[in-house]
Image (cartoon, rainbow, N blue to C red; front, side):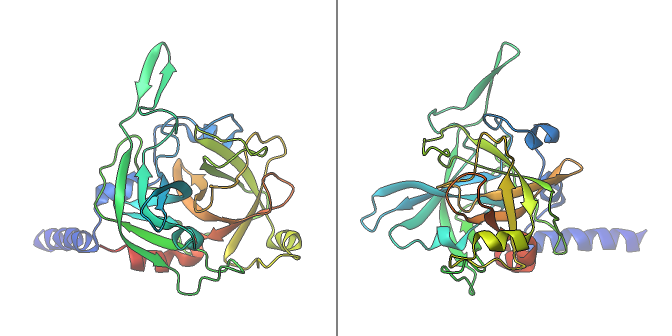
Length: 290
């Protein structure tokens, strides 16, 4: 009995040292929206559907607010993963993140359901303590397009703010797998989108993807996942969706398997290039320890 209690105490101590708890582990990748719904094409995402999605806020060299230009994904209570290109843009500086957003046009996000108004907590704006870009990132080819952003405080989880799970390092996708992206990037016609969208896609082979980018500087490697939106999709990944999550679900638990990285235009004519998160799980974990 003493040996068993000693083991339990040791495991709890390890969790405290590494900065996570069993409660945090259980919560990742879960939310209060039916997972099957997220795999169907719709006009918009539902409220609380992707509570790990964050907006990245920028300022210019004079300290003037330059708006939200990229996305990221919350992976624990004070760390976000995004694309390296979103962390080191040339003309603006990444200064903060917004969590818990749904409708950019409203201060409080609510929906009417069964004659009742369902509202979520106000958004949370958080500063940044540290930005870590992968040392082998190449902005020309798009190789190793990944970064970690450490927040300047630990955030409290709620229905609209939750972390997503990282995949296992050996996670693989295959052509035809259905996956989901999200964000507020412009429509195919260049129109502004204010309500979070849901983008359902399928994985395409890297060989087919390479053909789309053969006349560009972008390279498609084993560290990429390429996708194409479904033919009857209403939404596509587009400008301002960079850095956001590419997601898969298993047993109602969501994983961030990719990071929106590069593309040609908006629509399903050309494949979208995503950074394969499974290739960087060890690097991410090394950099999110607190």
